[in-house]
Image (cartoon, rainbow, N blue to C red):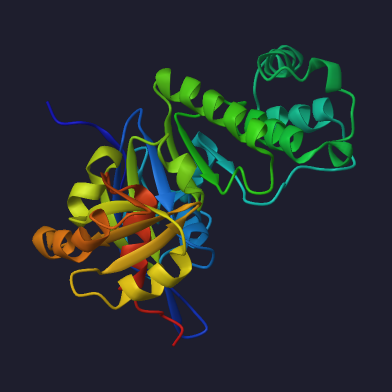
Length: 308
């Protein structure tokens, strides 16, 4: 049986000031999936998300979100999705309870007091219910924003860089809550540039300079990119880095802490390139699984800047 897609768009295009910031973008997000939307700042992720939820009209292309046309039925989409913006967008001079009450009334929810009380309890914010939002830390603001975006029980959450600027513990807590939502059948499209968060996603789309570079199940990304990788540890890695960059068969060298990750598509050529190091004392050279970060660095290297 075919999987139902909550987002199904094709050929989305958007131009600002003569520059095409989103170029022929297509994506299908299955129901109940967490879809990671990865790319550097300025890659067009936010513009794309705003088109998906009806806040921006595309200059070209189209499709549906939650079964509604993103161009002609944008109002219906806005009422049914939860959208968490990149910057905190609630009222900082209002308390957590007041912000949630405002959002509940905006959605015309029944039993506003009960809905708000349940949200405060679910997000463990009851002790902070009367704290001004502007006095909260980044992690608590993030939690409040997610509670507000989920208050009307949307079946689709669009989260734009939701963990930017918060500490690792708050990020981990956020992802546990998102996974809990997905387990209940809620679909999530979350944009990020944190590669360690991407492993939480079921599917991943890489975007750069307004164009989609790859789109696949997270487990299949390395296979799709077709990179082979070796991990090298040892002394004088800076000198080795420069030497390997010039070695035939090596297409990419990236520093990961105390190690170099050396990659190439031609496995035999890459093996020949690192073979002398495997026999050289002072270096530990082992095969490594190509990760999302290596794949992204490689894809970015071939992407063309749309502002040139």
